[in-house]
Image 1 (cartoon, rainbow, N blue to C red):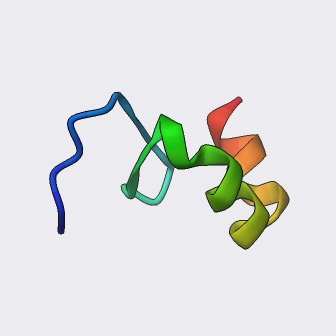
Image 2: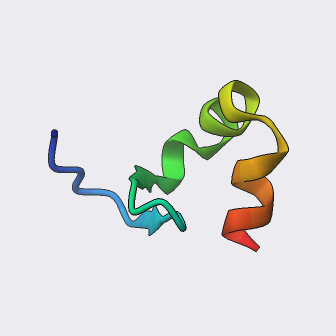
Image 3: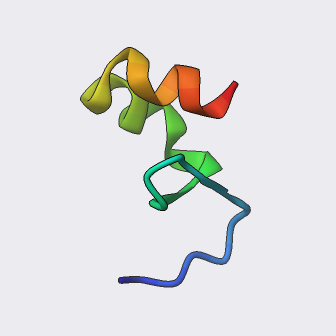
Length: 38
């Protein structure tokens, strides 16, 4: 895994994603990511 210097959000499945990449991640994952973040 790469270490991100940006703030990250940890999802329910334990995967941390950088906030700066949320838009792309949500598009790839669909609504599941949106619900996890909220």
